[in-house]
Length: 285
Ligand code: NDP
Image (tube, rainbow, N blue to C red; front, side):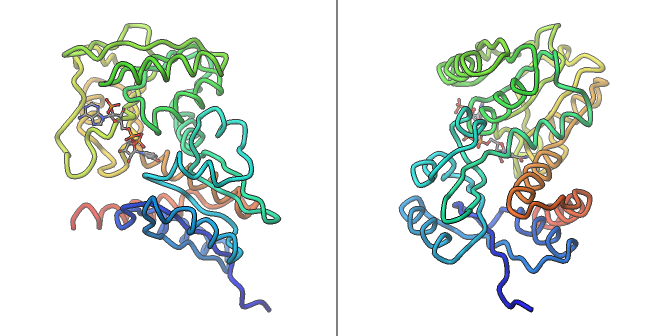
């Protein structure tokens, strides 16, 4: 009998809207594990102390969210190859006193995408060039996408991300300017919103694009998890597209983190159900 729980958690700011803890603790309970996930509000100037504290207290690992995904890298001993290419870390494993940084955001997206279409050979268009877009662009390219197009408000960021993907993955990649009423090209198979447009409370705000370009049968995915069905996804559904909410990505990035921390295969259905009920509550409040 041990009275010592396995401890994990998250460092972010703001932390109060982050539903990941509810989802991960539900998975721990379901697996019968004596384990905790502590959602901690950590300011940038406190990150190094928080990481040292987690190590000193024997935590198994932690997530990093906004604004720490880049800054945490300097505090780690090593990165997985994918995290090194992405250049951002959302999951840390503490093993034998060493800190290993991984990025499960893009892997979570690809696992979710596979419920609609296999990425191999596909032409993927991503709106956004921030952290989520970076992880999705790299992981879809590593999963075999033929091409990745980046469209972003700040064009220089789109160009930098496209050049990065082309240099570090087998996929071809290029950037396009986000003109008014942007028309997605006819050869595109998968459209991804990886911007924060449409996030709660902006339930009716959507991307500036030509609705006619959303052809029946293409996949339209959103990274926004709250609300799960964004204005973009409502539009895509009305046009006969296959849609994918940000919930699947959020669940699957958590599944990947749990695998890393515990070596166990968590129950994704339990995690998804917990997340959905947690987000319904937060959307009402
Ligand atoms: P970043 O701040 O790194 O990037 C934000 C991106 O959104 C940039 O490309 C920015 O463009 C663009 N953007 C923001 N506002 C506008 C606007 N009004 N018009 C056009 N473009 C805009 O954020 P992240 O990449 O970390 O997160 C993006 C979203 O993804 C968030 O909503 C986050 O919650 C979600 N997310 C979901 C996850 C999931 O598991 N479902 C995981 C991680 C993130 P510009 O460069 O021009 O400023």
